[in-house]
Length: 76
Image (cartoon, rainbow, N blue to C red; front, top):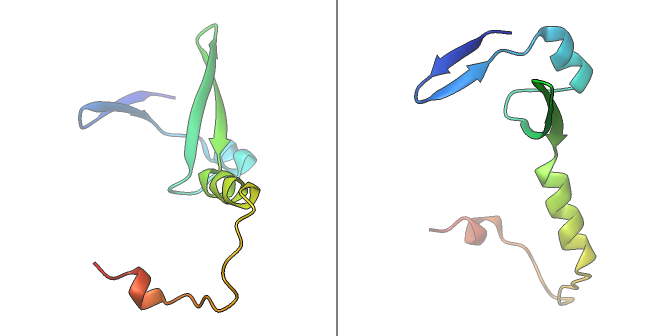
């Protein structure tokens, strides 16, 4: 892969075979977890799943009469 300039950063394009093998799509996040002899070891992050697991571990219960209001939640 070739390293390219992208604004003030550097970027690489991932080969299609690698993208398919890792099940990547636009917007996914990757974490570089190690560098071994100039080889990057990456891990696909699933921040949404991790956040939901953290919330579930809190064992919160909502009041029985609670009703979610999407419009109210999105008010600014």
